Image (tube, rainbow, N blue to C red; front, top):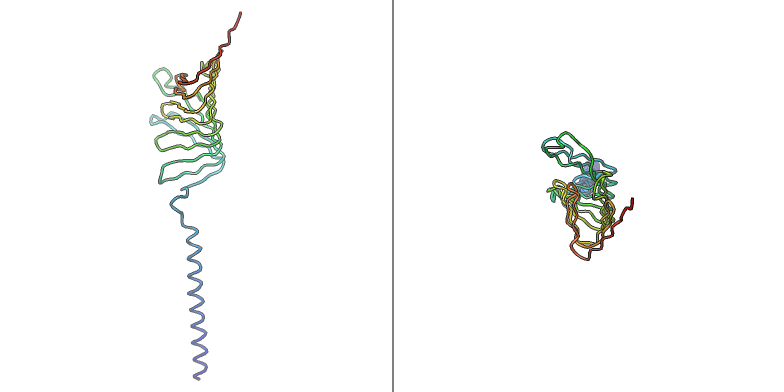
Length: 194
């Protein structure tokens, strides 16, 4: 009878050790499920988002191949973004919700204060054919999505009605169709003879 109790107790002890070992193994699997502090809160593929102003008007529409949002920094990272800006609400166009500019780049970072940092093959295109300022091209630019101010410290090409310019250090406003190059400016005008 003593041998039987030893065998039963040995089987119970081995079962408990096996159970304890399995608990420790699943804990490592749980660690892979816990989000690291430097990883994004959410990620997405082929996303499209519309952002509205406090008055309920469309402010901008953003689409991207991939998106990562980081809650701790408040930044959103985009790959191949396209951002459509809407006209800023004023007294004269309070009822209109027209897309006025299309911004595109290789990648972008949007901060929580509505600053969009565009990198790689940055293009800002006016969606109005009558716009004085038609297109802006550069490698890096910063756009304030609330005011539509644009800045760049890189070489910039500007295309407009009957002119194009190249230079460094752009400041401007897309809504007002104003762009100023501050250094090494070359401008070419097209004269229409009628």
